[in-house]
Length: 354
Ligand code: NAD
Image (cartoon, rainbow, N blue to C red; front, side, top):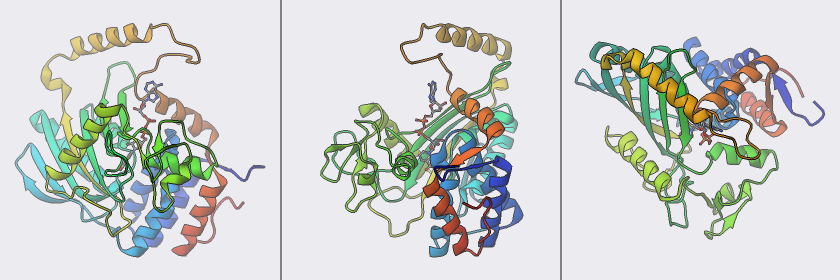
């Protein structure tokens, strides 16, 4: 590790995260859910949503913005519509519980809509689609984010929204599932942080500085006053971000963003539509139609620099295979931050030492 980076086996990293979360006073189950989801994000290549978030979680917990050992509370239940309150608990627990309920209702009724409000950070949203896929179900997730605004509206010159993710999961017979999961900003905020920690620039046309001028310097997003990330796909990505805010937040009575909140907590609202595809009675037709379509699309001759056409979810599956076999690389800055954060809650022996 000449560059100070650390390569860690996923299970060992989960163990470390569990020790830190248990030091919060969390139950074994909570510590396990948090560690599996954070390390799962690293495993799928999304370091922005992996263990690098632990220092922020520690600070927000110590400041009182993240409450331990919370469980979803049912606010409204019409059978196929559930509204759940999260009370600023760990999103890793609340998201899991919300979708367990959604899965059960979708199996019972054919479909269900589950709205979770006031959850602390829900992490990588693809994780929740994968929970539905494991139960054989399609899911669509609209998520809003209430924290310091970092994304400019289309045509705007300062930050008014956060990175509102959107996600769809589709289980397929005889093929890996489709997991479409992205932030509606041109890149996820955590990826700007990762670039800053690695001393790298971001791609042009991704960021504007605090004057609204284009920049590739990731530090411009964390300086005071800070700049903004642009929405992806011009007015279309911006429009999807708006819809995520309205459905993920306002529809179920959760907060929406309307300024800089006082707390550093990241509050997510998520509306998930969970569908049992078997209720359409089209299983064999659906499978062969999907297969035909995917083969057709993937037969497109690739352009320069692209090795093959992929389906959404494939890059994450590739990362998962590679990182499960060879370990997860954590950059030196992120590792130092994790060690410092662990010490704040009394966990001082962090393996491996650097
Ligand atoms: P991204 O830009 O890496 O896009 C990921 C999506 O694009 C995946 O579905 C992936 O399979 C697909 N993809 C990538 N390359 C592909 C290719 N070559 N061919 C086909 N499909 C391809 O993701 P992002 O916008 O950086 O988001 C990263 C993560 O951040 C997501 O998991 C998201 O849920 C999470 N996030 C969470 C929050 C929150 O508040 N909880 C906010 C924003 C983002």
